[in-house]
Length: 326
Ligand code: SF4
Ligand code: SF4
Image (cartoon, rainbow, N blue to C red):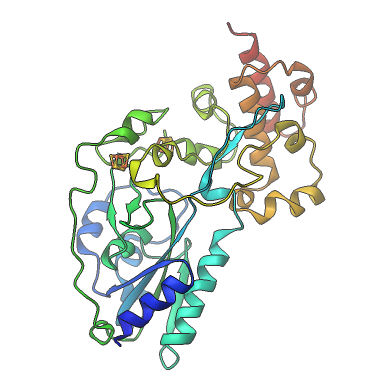
């Protein structure tokens, strides 16, 4: 059995997908990144595209994918409910992905050095995933895998094991993974997607994570999203088949979230990926969602209209104005 076959055995057992690729620089990506501002990263273009700057003796890359395709059954219980994207409702995935990579390292790479990353690593994880054969980029920017679709977290590992030792089959690139479908671009509520490129400043997922005061246009674009956005994923036909369980955090009770103590937040949302931006950002978004839902919630909003925190105060005032609009 080859090293690659053993990797696939582990992947099946751990309910993930996995692949391997060479460690040469990502030259094409480097060209694409020049002059582009990328949010939430401090790495330079060189660090993002040259694996050897992170591990000088790197020989190959290992990528894994962990599905987050969650069932979204709407809840109609009379409460004001916001929405949290599928990728953010579960246990903080960074740790789960790292655990899966540790299992691979301890099993296959005992006598090798390896560096494990999940989301915060220097390389562009989508590019690593493509090189390692996990899938091809769809028009909604997700990497689409033939087995589990495009809703999966990506983690990767740099190792000094040379690529040839894996005896991996060559990656067959499917450059037309979307064929004539255009559902994701059509479904994007803020027209952030165009020709396979995302204008992150318009992307609701980015806006829900942005700190501070949101402009009127940004607030309106949020709709009832409290954290993240995944509409371009949910409409994708590639994600229809592979579904997981219901999550209690998918449609958060807005009043409950607004009245939550720090301790209650620690015990609930903090353990999910949506919790990383902190209670305050989620509460700001929850206040905005009330306005965008035109909820009959002036009494709730007025409690925050003179809040000492400017972003909270402005969000409440935005929504008080919004619910008066026809
Ligand atoms: S995450 Fe939401 S806002 Fe961003 S591109 Fe997808 S559908 Fe559009
Ligand atoms: S919705 Fe259609 S166009 Fe968009 S990523 Fe999925 S298959 Fe591709």
